[in-house]
Amino acid sequence: MKPFELNYTADAKGLLREALQAWGISKRTLASVKYGGGQILVNNNEVTVRHPLEIGDAVTVVFPLEELGKGLQAESGELTIIYEDEALLIVDKPPLQNTIPSREHPVGSLANVVAGHFENHKIPATLHIVTRLDRDTSGLVCIAKNRHIHHMLSVQQQEKKMSRRYDAIVHGLTEQEEFTITAPIGRKNSSIIEREVRMGGQFAETEVKLLKAYTDFSHLELKLNTGRTHQIRVHLAHIGQPLVGDDLYGGTREMISRQALHCRRLEMIHPVSGRALSFESPNREDMAALIR
Image 1 (cartoon, one colour):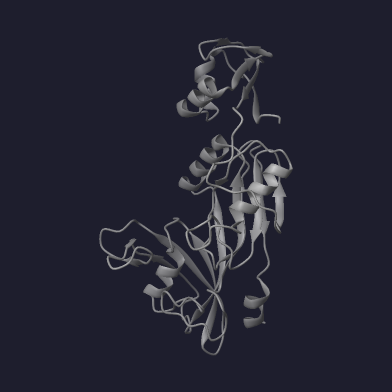
Image 2 (cartoon, helix red, strand yellow; image 1 turned 90 degrees about the horizontal axis):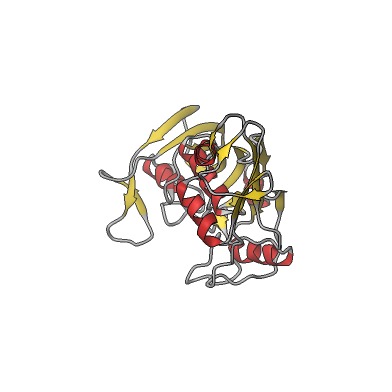
């Protein structure tokens, strides 16, 4: 198995440690490289972070091989790959599949199938899921192939350089064409699963755009500005328009057998090349049938 590596060219004189920091390599990452079996090379020679750089020096960071977590079983299964390279894997998750295993669903999760994909293609990585979806929710999921790439993408999320847009079908008629829901979310005292809008909860913000109003439901586009657990579901229930099919938060399953929520678009900056990336996933048939 070939380890993951990143390559840079020094554009200024100075200590290697300072250049690595400027390139986004954290102290924690450097420690994992130093003590986990990785290497730092300058012009193909192994050095320490105290090495003085000259302009034009070629720097390579070789990351330690990662092992699949012992609690995760690699499985074969259908995997819809939208994009893949040495750093990223973007997949289209079907509805009614866990992103990660749970006590109720210990096998068959997206993580299990991706682990099988890594094993079959000899990719030395464990699972670094950057954008997780609920079991019922379908659509795009971003997975990093290295913990440093995961860190870089998490920073993108914090800096709002990664954007996710969802299609949602909600009960009731939405009157405003565009608005923002800003309401703090916390765990409901009476449940270990449910969340609610509550004082003292975490800041949460969802942008809402009406795409089309039907007789007794509405088709919305949603953009997450934060990533709280059940954020979309809680915010929509909070304004009195729960997701169709979301019986946990006030919706009914008369029209669809799962919550009508789909991650349709994912936009980000490639953590290695710096290129702008944009991915699209069409609605699944059960949601598409409602809004034809």
